[in-house]
Length: 297
Image (tube, rainbow, N blue to C red; front, side, top):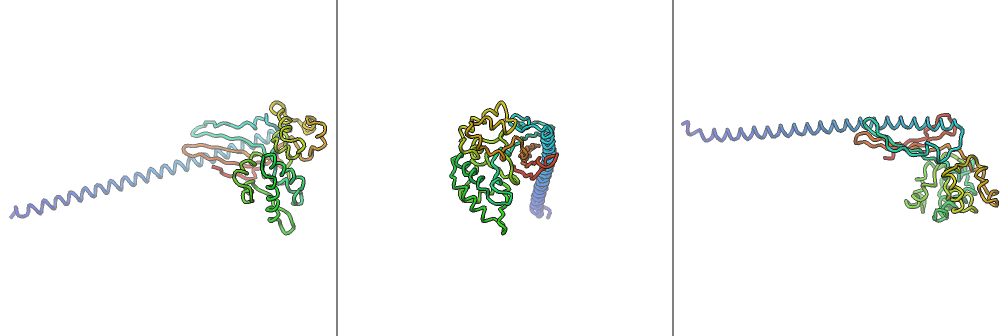
């Protein structure tokens, strides 16, 4: 009788072993999944920590930049290419990370909002200068006309035109494709209201836009002296021009002081890299104001 039950018992034992192996495999799979989730949670925690450190470092560097510009303004000296703040800061290694940054002077660029008068209307002289800038950059002068037409469509019921906040807004206007904006970007900016042009930073193309009789080539020669000696005042700049052109200088639009800057701030911690850009204004307050700050990477 015992021999008759031996076969079923062996089969039952085999099934039990298989069941145990399946349970062991399931437990191992679940354990592996839990471990993987734990590793991912730790990685996410590490990324959040690195991101928090990068943001805190970015904010600290921004405050240092503001203090630098404030102290520089207190010297009441002309702003020029030889100023220490005009030199980009290479990536500096710090504990657990690295920081980098640079200040970009903006008063040397053609301010789109200079196209407006105090009443919010198109300034004919400024529009002519903008058209000349386009020609100086080998772009169609008709882009000035399409800009004016599009801008007028956005006028208020009283006829006042809105300010540009960024030159990227030009992208919706006919003719202003990506390649055109790439050419314009080093020479163009959108700053709050009308701003004077710093001759210690202005490009030859922008200067010749306001002084078309001078021309780009002659403007480059006049501005080449800035590599070794900046202009102390507007009168010094005018004295370097040919006598017949001095009467055509738009003196009221020129300055040797800068009030608007971009600051590019980079922070690297672990696998996290943050790049921010802020617009600083030191025209009104002792400490430069942060008009906006945005992440660009």
